[in-house]
Image (cartoon, rainbow, N blue to C red; front, side, top):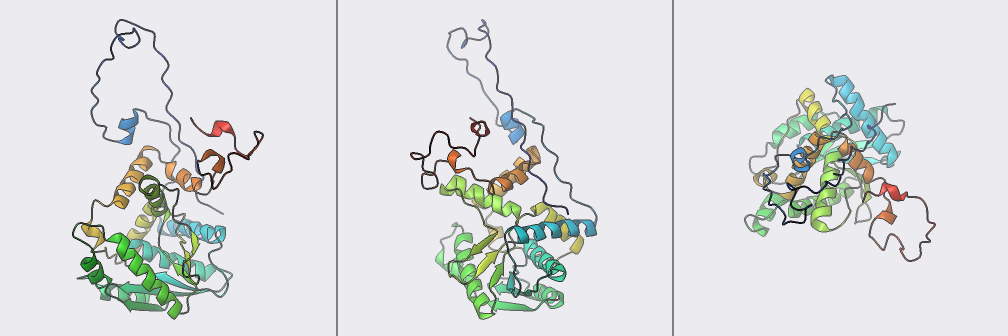
Length: 328
């Protein structure tokens, strides 16, 4: 059975060796340091000045059936690894109209058709009152998708625009409002699982946002009991690279509908983190699978969280992590 590609560490640039003192080297000869002007790098490769040997990126199949089979295996593996689905579940699949939500519904239906357990799917769209949103286009798709569907109407668009000052990021407030409405809808429809369409790259972008702007090591869990104590959130696309979803979307021709709020905010930090991840992936093709593996492979002894590791009580003979694994 094919699984998610193994993570492999990229090669590290060599450490420069010391140079002998020469007349042309004023620092080594004891003179004042020379001033060097460095132009702005155009990429990470330019920034680092290295071209490391990188592991090969998993090629996206150009055959629809093969691509579908491989994504299905990723979804199946995530469902098993995180115990996402159980016999008798009623799963609310959140359909925003974006490519990820179409992929979520499609591949959960694939899982439903082949799984030895029996679970129900109901596709739910929250109509948020966005001006010009082609609801009829999405509803036509849902009518033909083969699963029951429900459309919940709640004008969050007006609420967000009224509550936030111009220029402020809308996504945080919008997502909180949407989450609360969807949780209430799930209860009302008798659903015990809420499926969201976040993929591998969403998880890594969230990790970077929390690392650089929130001061915490935190990403998106593949399975989470919601704060209301009732709903369980699952992310079946957790192992799937976004580029694979984009490729499959081209085969399917889904009627993708962009968010009219998000599209007005080109400079939001999440977009910048996504662009940085894309640049890292271009420079080191095997780095993103490695990053996803990292959030499943914690070593508290090599972090600085005193709540997770008792640095005073640990004996010198403690084992489990090799010192040479922590690069200095």
